[in-house]
Amino acid sequence: MSLLWSLKHFDAYRKPMDDFRVKTLSGGLVTLIATIVIGLLIVLETKQFLSTDVLEHLFVDSTTSDERVHIEFDITFNKLPCNFITVDVMDVSSEAQDNINDDIYRLRLDADGRNISESAQKIEINQNKTIADPTELTQEVKCGSCYGAAADGICCNTCEDVKSAYAIKGWQVNIEEVEQCKNDKWVKEFTEHKNEGCRVYGTVKVAKVAGNFHLAPGDPHQAMRSHVHDLHNLDPVKFDASHTVNHLTFGKSFPGKHYPLDGKVNTENRGGIMYQYYVKVVPTRYDYLDGRVDQSHQFSVTTHKKDLGFRQSGLPGFFVQYEFSPLMVQYEEFRQSLASFLVSLCAIVGGVFAMAQLIDITIYQTHRYMKNRIAGGKLT
Image (cartoon, rainbow, N blue to C red):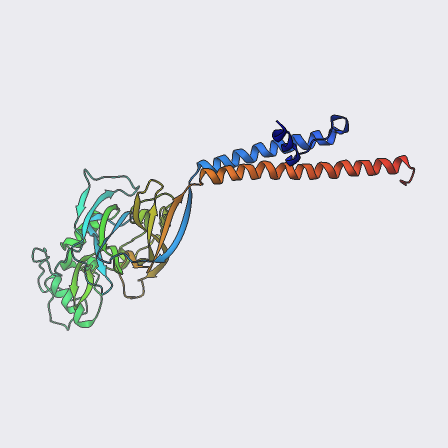
């Protein structure tokens, strides 16, 4: 019993007698405010404890370049008919990539953007075609005009004759105005679908190397180790590639992922514009709290428009040129431990009460000082 009694000498919280305790209005007000502040801080700290934080790390990308990158896109062309749109995926050397997994479709749209297709039509990418179409219909005329591209007396009886004569002169022929080309397949299709639009959507899996993919009119083919599109002598200005990017992403989705091009509208209300998007792709890893890991990509983008109206080289269409960053971003989900949460609660309670006591003492001592000065008649 004496041992327990001696423990009172170790009491760090000595209590004054009730007769020496002074309760004030200001002290009650400070205590009430401190209690409310403590309650609010505890609620916020508990909410923080129950939530998941995300830590960000940056390091050199050590993943293999043999892996395939998933690209998903959904593009709506307002005034470019589906019949003329092709999809190509090229590498940095402008050669078509091989072994590409793709699943791309297109839907015809009317002038108001409404779907007029009975079903989605699948598009095959990187479909090289020859320039000449042996089944092309031409309009035979008797000693047809070469429209100033050949000497007098020389006849251009077919559409191909007119094209050849213009090619020798280095001129650009507008086959819509050539009588011999009235039955040209491209002229007929262009006239038939003139006011239509097209929605192109789907996915491709490409090699993890710099390259580009584009949606553009014309028959694509390789010529002199270059990738070109044959517009069949139609003026590039005739093709209006104004579009809306409904969705574009590299890699699968993860919490907090940003899509910088979603909803972007590029409309010039005229043809012959080459819309270019220069994309920097950053490999990204997302580690979930339950141990799951997602490998994905983020990207930043710079846009550029090129007007082809003054014999500029290029092709009207939607072009995405991408390259991969050597750095990887890792996002790691993190939750505060229980011990840290309890320490924070103790710090809140102790800190607020300590500050409240300091404020209360200051108010009490100031009040006593003023009261004594007034009582002594020294306050002027």
